[in-house]
Amino acid sequence: MKNYSQIVQDIGANLRALRKDIPDTMQGFGAMAQAATRPGALDRKTKELIALAIGVATRCDGCIGFHSEALAKLDASRAEVEEALGMAIYMGGGPSAMYAADAIGAYEQFRLAAAGEPAKA
Image (cartoon, rainbow, N blue to C red; front, side):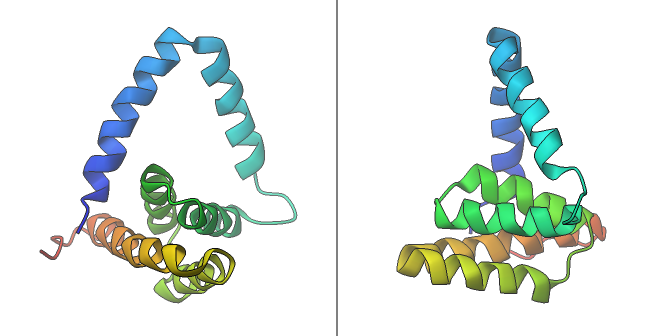
């Protein structure tokens, strides 16, 4: 099982370096992320579920990590995450099914961490 907490931590460190090295680009990306995730007709949790499904369909470990972590913090239920993963599998086929399996594991890692429970080996 991939350690998504470590994946998020490693990518976060590299993103900090990019913010320093290409600040205009990264500020633009950050502004876009804030605008896209701001609650509107869809609430933040729904937007994070969509982002997770897209991350699965595009096979992006970092996306799976960051959006699973956000969903755990937003108290998304396992059933909500699984329904979003079902849509990712529908749209992305077999490869998305493999990444959906990773994504539910990532969600569980972050959910357990948020609840103060030890991660399962």
